[in-house]
Image 1: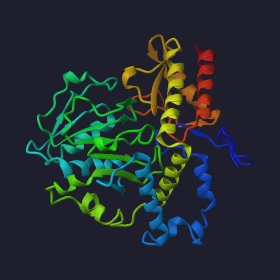
Image 2: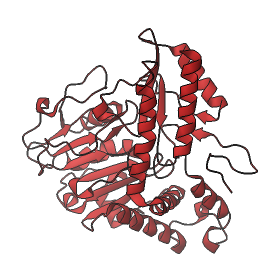
Image 3: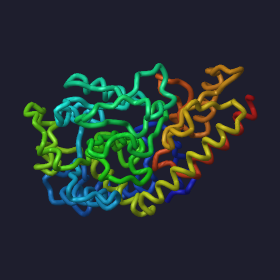
Image 4: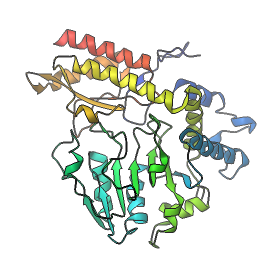
Length: 381
């Protein structure tokens, strides 16, 4: 039995994990896993010990695919693949398949933070990449679309919908991109936190360990017709979309336990009310954190343009006399940990504090952090 504040009755107090990933899973999911850990579905064994060719596991992966198709209304013209290699693996898979899709043999990359920058640099190993906006020294805003430099007919347009480190989120496909251009999107840190129209995209991919599972799994959703147009015959087998489609994501042994957890998470999301409920929860949690920051009279500072503030990853600094106060930030992290709130340290690239509000974080847990932030400011202002 569990209580809503993150405690497990009769057991040690669970920490509240505000980390950027691997992220906190809902207690209901963990308890369901625990209940069948030694005997999955009457098989007399653990899901991790079952063959991926077994009837029992086949049902798990089939159910997972059907659930995500239901949640996102994915049409049959799209394939759903369960990959290994993380989102980083897709930084290579995408250009290997699609960089030469059009005569321009050029891909447009919108670089808005650490992860889209890594993706662009990886793609440059395979061909021509056009950086739509110049690389800046800091990622705190997205330049106006009328300043972007787009290729006339690119093979594809690539962007990251949420930059985990810098806290920049784009809520939809940029309007300036022509509708005939294939859109490829890394949704790793905001996937399943809001509804979106799959049919606007050629490829969507997301690693599982933030909003819908554990590390070891990357979900790829892609238009089947584009695969037929791929002309690169030198794609490594482990990255070849067609091979994985033809083999139902089981060309080699897939990450069976990760897929099992993802299946549990898809079921949990449906039980909560689907993406409508996840969207409402994400808005409530993030708006309350930003309210505390914006009403702190400069004690807490988030430097991202409000238009592009992320709802899932909120970086901020604690400021004294206009400068970041690393001593206070260290104290903040120490006292938060003493109150069972962990993984709040900002990424080394930007420093400070970072609050990640993935689907597994409850509103009540968010409020515990807010109360602490308010008290910390009062005691240290």
